[in-house]
Length: 138
Image (cartoon, rainbow, N blue to C red; front, top):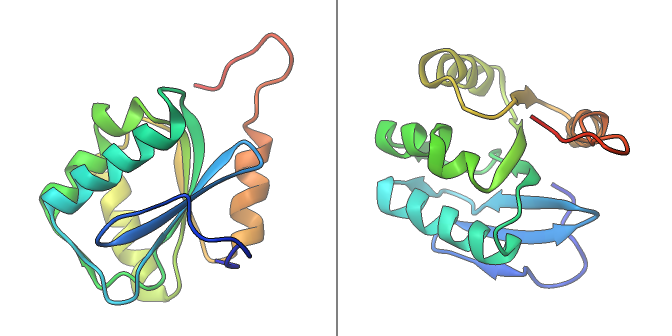
């Protein structure tokens, strides 16, 4: 993820967050091992930043080391859907794509979620989902 020139709006043990251009961006810290408690902390940080609104979310997973199955399940479920309208996951390797596709098939996120190797493509997809006047995102 191209790092914004300003400090993060929020930071947890495993992730940094920015609100920008009507989107929430999250970048996992290098070597992060995300457990259930970390996923909860990340959702709480997202909820605080969004003030209860649902945002399109760009998540940079390229530096994460691992995510527990419990963390993945939480991030695909209703608690995450309360703060996200759509999620673009930026990954960095073919192995990440295999793992990401397994996650999408097994956990079936409640919000539209796609994998990308390009941050620009991820942003374009999220922008394509923006509601037109009088419409809402899924």
